[in-house]
Length: 303
Image (tube, rainbow, N blue to C red; front, side):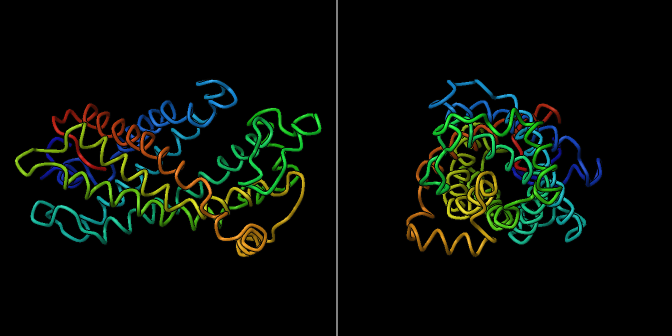
């Protein structure tokens, strides 16, 4: 996309290459893999050591981010061309395009990500002490010395389908939808405008440093604000392994509030924001640099 009209505009190349561009998915996969390498040690250092058990998150999160970035970029590009046949003549970024593209990416992400997230939560429950503060559950396997319910990701998947049906794979999906749709709006939109704001007007495009900083700040904002609904989602997804406590999102919020107060929804918010910075910085940097390499650009272009 070396013919972009200005930094951060995914528009002009579409005239020559079509609205749909597969390289956004490839670059998203690379960015997702980069974020796992950076973020996985932060997830597992207390239990596994830095890179033990990274194969499942590396495969799943990389594919997940490939879809999210690909859907966002192509949707934004489609909206831009639908609104203005000549993107060069239009404004560099239209908030409504960014907002709608982020929302579409959020909805699609739940369809793909809910089963992956569920399996990750279920496996975490038995491979590390799953904080009672986060889920309101004691780690029974660790406490009673029982055999773990799941032998790995594939066994977890098949067990859930056998015992809970296909719908069981989407336990907590409604909470995830309420987390991810606004979450991705607060992810992509701050990134786009922050990278533009950081980049001097004289520059052809944002530098890798600007991408890293804008991506990190966007990740901190998104993960910090998503923390309350992430608590609800995690509790719903963990529910049903040993006990069934919740009847849905509202019941989970109500029970959690009654037993633990408002503060329960903000536990871990600082950790999430701090953790979100390096992971998101690595993700956007991996995405932007790989996209530049794939397209032969000499400047970084926003998704």
